[in-house]
Amino acid sequence: MEIGIDSFASASVDSNFESGKNNSKSLNQLIQRIEFADKMGLDVFGIGEHYRKEFLDSAPSLILAAAAARTKKIILTSAVTVLSAADPVRVFQNFATLDLISQGRAEMVVGRGSFTESFPLFGLNLHDYDDLFTEKLDLLLNIQKNEVVNWSGNFRPPLKNQAIYPRPFQEKLPIWIGVGGTPASFARAGKLGLPLMVAIIGGDTHRFRPLIDLYREAGRKAGHSPEQLKVGLHSLGFVAKKSEEAVNSYYPGYAAMFTKIGKERGFAPVTKVGFDAQNGKLGALVVGEPEEVAQKIIRHSEALGGITRFTFQMDAGLPHEKLMEAIALIGTKVSPLVNSKV
Image 1 (cartoon, helix red, strand yellow):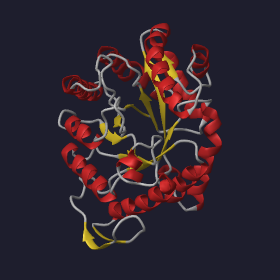
Image 2 (cartoon, one colour):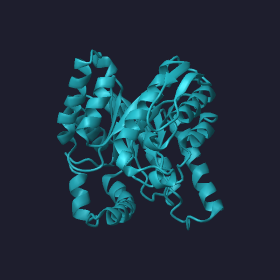
Image 3 (spheres, rainbow, N blue to C red):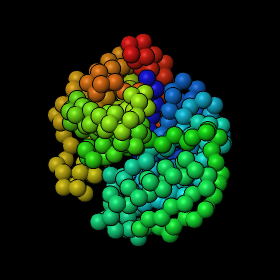
C-alpha cells in the first residue's frame, strides 16, 4: 500500500495571514517537509487547492514544481484540483510540466471541491456545480488521451484540431477522481475506469463500503479490470511516539479549524467527546502512535474491500517540528508495519 501525506499549505500558526514573510516561511517549510517525506520513503505527497486566507495552496502545481526539483522518488499530486473552477487545458499543461520537471512523478486528483469560494472568484454559478465538473472532466480526459483535440461543450469555447502542449513525461498522465459521499460521483468514476480517492473526514469508515462497492460494480459493468479500479483513502490523522502525545498535539488545532468551518456551515462546535469517538476503532480519524495507526489503516482497508493508497491530512495548526517528527514516524514505522500485513 502506498502511504503518503496531503497538505492544504496552512499558514503558520504564528502568522496574522497578512505577512508575506510569515507566509513565505510556511511555504518553504512545507517544501522542506515534502523533501523530508521523500527521504523517509513515503510514496506520495499531495497539495490541495483552496481560496481562503488560512490556506496557501491556491496554486498547487507551483508548490509541487518547487518540491519536484528537491525530490527524487515521491509521487507529487493534487489533493484535489478543483476542476469545476479551472480550465482543463491549463490544468493539463500545468501538470504535464510538473511531470516533465519531476521525470514522471506527477499525478492529479480532480474533484468538485468541498469549499465554494472559487465559484464567485471565477464568475461561475453554483447552480452549475455538477454540470461544470462533468463537462470539464470530459475535456481533461480527452486531452489526456489525444495530442490534437476536437471538442465542444457548454461552458467553454470549442477546440477544433487544437494541439495541446507540452505532453507529459509519462505516456499517460495519471488522473484520479476525488470524492466525498455522493453516490453518483462513485458511479461516475467506476464507469470511466478512473482510480478513486475517497475523503473520509468524519463518521465510521466502514459505512463507505456500499459506495466503494457501487464504484467497483460500475467499473465492472463498463468492462474495466479490477486492477484498474484502485481505491485510495484520504483521512485526517497525526502520528507521535505515544498516543496521548498525538492526541494532545492534534486536538486543539483540529477543534479550532473544524469549529470555524462548522460555524460557516451551521454545524455544532467540535467537542473532545466527539473527537475521541471519531478517533476510536471504527472512526475516521487516525491519530495515535505508530502501531495503533498502522492497525487502523489495515482495518480501514479491510472494511472497504482493500485500498491501494492511504494519505494523512495533518493540517491542524501543528508546528513544523512536530510535522517533521510525524513524517519520520510514518516513513520508518507506520508504512513498514502496514505493508508487512497487506
